[in-house]
Amino acid sequence: MPFLRSSSSDNNDFADYFGNQQQFHTNTNTTTNNNKYAMNNNDTTATTDDDYDNIILNSRKSRSNDMDEIEQSRQAILIYGDDEDQHQKGVVTKAAATQKSNKSNKKGGAGKRRRAAIAPPPHPHQRQPPMVPESNSRRALLAISTLAIIGGAAYLTWKYGLDAPTNWAETQEGAGNLWQAAGNKWNEWDLGNFSDVLDGLDNLDFGNLFDGDPKLGDNTTYLWEEEFIQPSNGGLHLTLRNALDDNWQTEFEQAVSDWQESDALVLETERVDVDHTCTPVDGYMVVCNANFGATGWVGINENSIVRDVIVSSVAKMNEYYLMNADYDHRRFTMCHEIGHGFGLPHTDENPYNANLGNCLDYTDDPSSNLLPGDVNMDKLRGMYLTRRLRTVEEDGTVVERTELMVRR
Image (cartoon, helix red, strand yellow):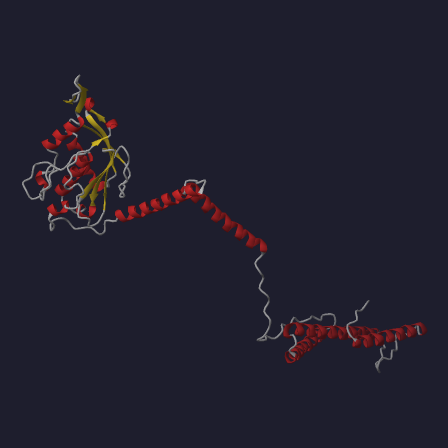
């Protein structure tokens, strides 16, 4: 059986062992009938087969102990480094544990030796294992994912937010439109917040609320574009876009029904999404409600005038005053602002005189001014059912003839 060298002491043990073995073979050759063998090894004589086995076992144990001490020293150096005191302490401690283990092996008998796994004693300055760095592949994957998200957001902004601009001028225009759209969204949320409104109009002078009317003092009559006017076929043909919330449907339907009594109007309505920003739409009258705040006006109409004709109209109900107002105030305001949308002026601007019986008359008590009056109907006929014809006489005189048409 081959053996491994581990120290100088092992060499001496192996020399003694092999010398004894050579003597053993010599005695065997000379004494063939005798089963006793003599061997001189530091005053130790082997006379039986058992003695020979014990010599081999002791030699193996000695070599194993030396190798254990070498391993203990190596582990102590790895743990304590150059700290000599701790190094020696660790060696002594592990050596003691090894001796105890050897004694236990002897009690268990030859061939049953087990090496005990002794953990090194704790040390306050013991080196901690290094942190395992994040793998390069994981970092690369994270970077790629981040760039993909940023790139996707940039592409969506370029294509849908800025309307896919191809030059710097278009980019600036798209950014302006995007900013305006964001502002509209904010206004829609803010104008649709009805938490800060008046409890009602009972403690207010309703007549004072006309002072903020931009049409005050301006009785100019404006007509819609000619494409919406058919004098021989009912007059003004107009669609009203209903952008009001549910709380205004009754007042809106009643006002439209009242104005349809005119033989100069052909009206249609279209229910659309609630729009508290009251966005104008060319060719339509938009009717809406929102909390515009303490503006001084309960309702307002804004006609877009181009070349002295109406191209769009918006009738606004101010919820700051009207949300908790009584039905008469709400119905009067709806009728009043829709009437301005047709191009009609005020019939009277003194709210404290006697009511004239029409919703375009300023009043502090709207109960008798809820409907369009005859004066309003006559005005509409002159606006949308008349046809003006001009002729030039032989002497150069221009003659204008106005014809009032009737609905067929």
